[in-house]
Every structure is written in C-alpha cells, then in structure tokens.
Image 1 (spheres, rainbow, N blue to C red):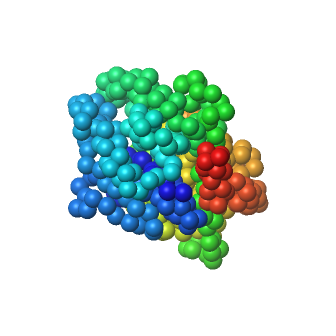
Image 2: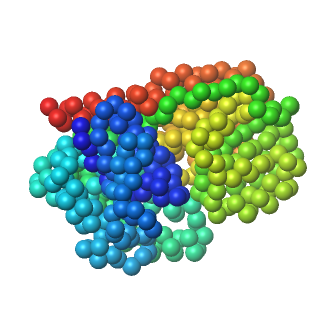
Length: 396
C-alpha cells in the first residue's frame, strides 16, 4: 500500500522519545514488507524540504506549531492547515491508499476526510487528561501549579476539540496499551470496538552475555530516559546514597534538566552512581545485558502510554522495577517479570530492589520470564502483523 503518515516530530527533530522511535520502527518495518511510506512532519530549521532514510520518504512542512502557554498560531500557518495543503498537492500525483496519524498529527486531513476519501488510522500514545495530570505531578510547586493553570485553556481546547475530532474522525484508533484505550473511551465516549490495542514492538536484541565490566559484589541497576523531575530518577538516585544501599550501583543513560543535580549526587556516591550521558540508539540497546546489569528501574510519576524502554529492558533479560502507572502493567507482570509498585511509594520501590538483590536466583528467573514475554508479545514482527491486519480490514 502507498501510505501517508502524519507526525509532529520525528527522529530528525534532535530531541526525541518513544513516540518518534515507534514511528521510525513502524514505518521502516512496513517498507521492509513492501509498502511505500511517506512521512509528513513539521520543518524545524531544515535545509532540505525532503529526505529519504531507510526507504522512508520524509516531507518537511513549513508551518508554525503552538506550544502550551504560547501565542496562538494563525489558522493559515498552522500545522493542520499546512500539512493538509502539502498532502493535497502530493496526493494528486502519489495517489495514497491509507493515512496514518500519530496522535493528532493527521487532524488537518481528518477535517477534509470526505475530500480525500481515504481510510485513516490514528495511533494514540496517551490522552490529554493524562498529559495534564503528569504536568501537575511533575511540579507541585506554586510556580508549577500556576504554569499548569495557565496551560489549562489549551488543555481543555484539545480535550474537547482536537482529541475528540481525531478519535471520532478516524476509521480505527490504535491505542498502544490497555490503559490508553480505557482513557480514550472514558474521555471521548468512542465505541470500544473502534479502538484496538497494539503494543509497541522492537527487533529482538542480540544480547552477548560476555561480562561487560561487572562490579563484583554489587547489584547493578540501569535507568534509560530523560533526566527530568517527573521521571523520578532524581529521587531514586538520592535514595541510593543511604548507607544501607551501598551494595547497589546505578548507571543513568539520558540527558535533561536534572543533569547538574544528578552530577552532584553522583559526586557523593563514591563511584556508585554513573552518568552515561545521551547515547545513540544502537549503543543504548547494548546496555540491556544481564552481564552488565541486574535490573532495570523505571521510577516515573508520568502517565505514559507504553514505555518502549521497558520492552527493550525485557529483551535484554532484565527484571524491571517500576511504578504502576499508565501502560506499564501491559509490559511488567508483578512478581513474574519484575515488580509493580504503587505510584510514589519510593520506600516500597527501594524494598523491592533489596528483595531482588537478596534473591539473585529469583532475579535471574524474572529476567528469563521478561525475555519470554517480550518474545511472545512485543516483537516488531508481531506489531507489524497487527497493523497489517487493520490495513486489510479497511481495504476490504
């Protein structure tokens, strides 16, 4: 099929996360299966208007995008209008057969759905209320709450208009976890049968279990993600400074606003907390290895749709200790592939880490269970199979 994809940021954008990575894997995977993919995305200081990477064509659209608390963007310069305008011109020659929208990325073409007459699949990685709750939990200071209050009109506008328009205007909505599906149904009153759950998938990792610098006698923890307050990594790092946690090490991969603060914590840790900085994706995947680490930690207070780092860690045969928020429970099975902890209970989180350390055989079995579950449910091929089933359904 000739497929057009709409997304507001990609791995070309510089700073990116799970949504952009999932889009890249999905599109390149579909190309490998014989589909033709063109991605429409905003242009951020691009010298070229187009690019081709691994068989996927990118068209960078000149537009203005609004952020929370920013001045409104005129309708004619907005992403919705400009993306639809560029798509209209491209479609006249390309003749697309299907449209995929990442989150509300396809909002512009959805408004002109009858003109194009094409089936539309939108992929939801979370909901507007989930994002707003995360912002409040991320910064409960007076300044943070004031900022959230100023953002409220934007949130409500998206809640009552954009989110409902793309959900109800799409033929099928893919939710990346059961948690996201439930939230979409609750917030938009969409029919449950219209929302399909497809967990994100990756290629199984080629894990070399040769010792990669083992710190004998230490229980080695790995964190991969943004270094921001809402990810909880600052609180966890401070916990590990306690005298009764000296048998633990923590490697932190990522970058963000907490870099300096974490650097100070690391300086007090006697070499047990190590900041690795931001690594390229291939290098990150090599970190998930039972020869290098004993467990993966995910102490976030954010409501995330389906964190891809959990799948990566599971393929790396690492048990996961995580707060039970959003789509985390789709990946982690409590007591089998790791531990799910009630949100914000850092004392319990700490105790679960101690439990794993004190029972290495149980930790090893959880790692094996994690790999088995990932192999059974979270491969890239399984994800692509599920999307192609939807494509066939819409084409019939």
